[in-house]
Length: 339
Image (cartoon, rainbow, N blue to C red; front, side, top):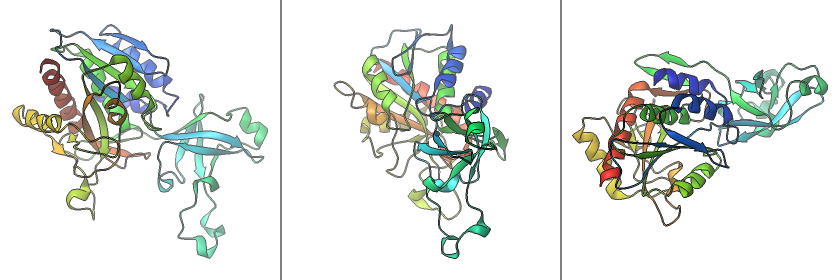
């Protein structure tokens, strides 16, 4: 699963441009399940278990990552761009990026400090004032390499460091995809559906379509969520802590979770000696927001890998939390299938 995650994180795949991620996932699950791609680009898989399920269970993770899209090229050969998904401007100034199908290297540029007016020195520039420099001599030179509509992804190495930590772009939510691949390639006790969903970062659009198509009774969203276990943050503001297992949500900005499922997840983790913790702040949202409103309603549970610095070029998580999340997702899928 570690090598799968490394490969997944290396691939480009902003919202609406998930094809390379999807192709790799197919290469990993082919022969282990039945699958198809729907009109929106979701990859839907069905894994036959050792037993038929009493209830239809869907496990979901989104394939897309935050990034940018090229909107234009200046006469100087610099690229104008727009955000795809929610990204704080502070995290991408001066960062390396890869542009388009050719992965053209670039850097997000900014007016140098020695040319900045005194009153603007401590201000964070607005995104519209930034550009991507790909080293082109002018507009025509740039257009031989890129064009408006090209995706732009953060460019950086997958790094393992410290006490079992991983740093990479796109851990949100290639971690969830790696977990689902691992489950599909393993033996499952009960039949189960999986959705590798598109366009979560721009409004949980893919999951709305996949949930409607699968029509599950229960759904488990495997995600990442903010771990603020960093200097200066205390109490519930830490949200969750790296190394303490998946964060179980009781509410976020798009879903009020079924209280019985929330409690059942924590009880199951305790019974099976799996580390788990409560997500202690009502913040964020994920595919559960779309899934639970599908058709006549779906009971949902979200289990998230605690991850520092989400939506940045350097997301950080602990590998043991990915393993614990996988174990609890599998255990809960079995519980829901037979209940």
